[in-house]
Length: 634
Image (cartoon, rainbow, N blue to C red):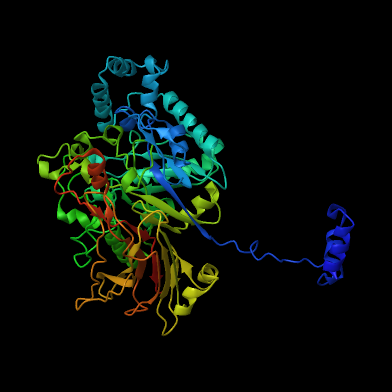
């Protein structure tokens, strides 16, 4: 036998390096010697089996609205920080993440990209411009805010001060792509190349972050499109199409902050021509914008209490008062601003046009302008450098949006800023290609800053026993579809069934509950929604109104602390739609809610001895939103 042979060889001091694999196997070797043996089961399993957390929306000093108001950290510091290194913030504070991120998109504004570092270095190319010299001299004279306002005037009027000369932008773009190449480490950390197209018609937000699948060798062939070129998303999509041909790589765009778009983000008409949306528009929008950033610092956009009055969790970190312009927000704008309502209206468009223009996956990201992707409540470095941690009243009281509003009631203040969010991506590898492909197929979810893990599969034959399978994920892909997927033409007598697993952030809070949110279109053309509690912690039971009692609250406001004495570290559910109609279009997404923890304003009050505004929540229930699974009758 092999074991006897090995003992004899070991006793004789034999070198195993001299033995062939066949000799080591001995005469117990199974089958013919020329037969290929596939002992390891994993080479053939190419489905995603890990979730990666990152930020698709971070600004550095290369963004003029960051660099000219105090951010001194460039892309290199941003990547280093995201990879887990300690850096000094622009205000001189040591800063570090509790755990590194898996990926980062430095998405600096395309408009005069890198102007602030060029002013600081007295760039010779910059000084060739009369406007450049004027602003440079203001900065050097200590009149930075005056210089910044000069730039804002040009931006607002879409009057590029360097029109016809892209040398400055090209130089800084290529420095940024070089930083991405330097810190991109396939398998460990992905440094994506990207930028933000900052469309702000009338001061209203239609911004998109553009993300490249490829590297510097591709991205350096172009210069980013900016608001100076156009504010129309349809022109952006054409530019992206042309850019793919020029660069040889693929691009996608992620819109954000529909909540401050004044009803433009998910409008019923096109921006420029004001034509009703048609099939061609819907196809192009979904070709270029497969995802939507539903949660970030400037508010959470999953739902709104006025649109979802029966959802007790809809009023979460809500920003709905104003934008960057003078226009007054009205309730009629809300349905064209929020994620859930857009998903519902997309069903109507699909019925009419055959294509859904709002069939997007869901991510979160920060939109931080500090170069620091911080989303933990006890480690929040604010929206911009002047609002980094301090005892200054600016930390809470600075106006972020609504500066042009006629009433103070319409202003949004720094204390309202949310320490949110992150993009979670189910992918096969931590590489640009694998992560980008997962984004394109919408196998992603959003969190409001936590790193809780959520997995969901939908199909027609799942049973409760499938929750306990050791090959849970493999069976999910084999017999169903993951988040972002499609179910079609239900078999007779079958209703969609969903398998959900949720695990708390290992450094965070326990889970309160898991919910399935369903939206559907009835035969009369009217949309509906319903929130189902499908798993929850403790021994709570729904009341007569069908609602679960609150999970409780362990937050000690004075000490800015909490415990995991309530909630559950793990929840799972098998849920079958009890009111399914195979003839009705529908979507389903999962929302996972944590137990209450101290909000960042509460941590600040404890640390600095300051007093937040009375309206500031003392606690927060962080959460995750998965991309939907859609059902379509055929």
